[in-house]
Image 1: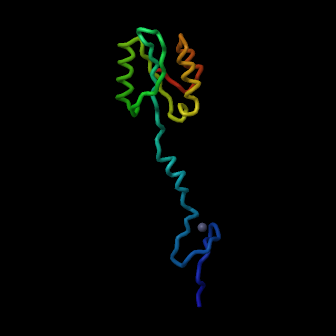
Image 2: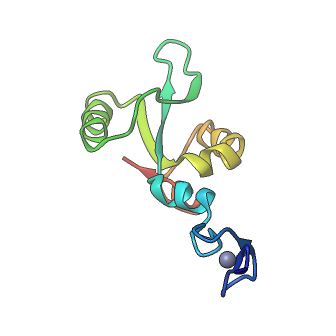
Image 3: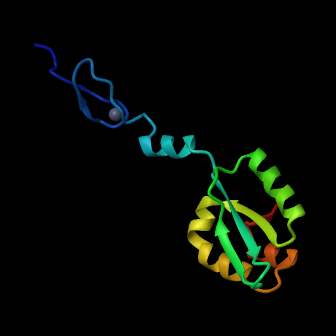
Amino acid sequence: MGTPYRVCEHCGAHLDANEKCDCRNPKQEEAAAEAQPMKLVAVCREIDKDTGRIAVYKINAEITGAVVQQLQIRARLNPELRYFTLTSGRWERFGDVITSILKRQTVTRADVDRIGGIVEL
Ligand SMILES: [Zn+2]
């Protein structure tokens, strides 16, 4: 009688004769994380022409090269609009802080640089 199972040489797991051990496969979660490209979000800072109130909100669109170009043109044509981009992870974690900074009356390029991880378009 032969051995009813074989032992994986890497982890020692008991396997059926034809079974391939999965200990050498990359974990599925890791593979999924690698497959997901870095996602960007764009944030608009808009000054209301009538009231002067400043609103900061996320743009509801997938941020592609074409969208970035459109936003840059829109910002040039409309001085009351400014657009910023950052990774979605950063926006989720620091969105409140970034929003409060962008809502200040004056936001210079240096202010934006000081926040870090955010770029004005
Ligand atoms: Zn194994």
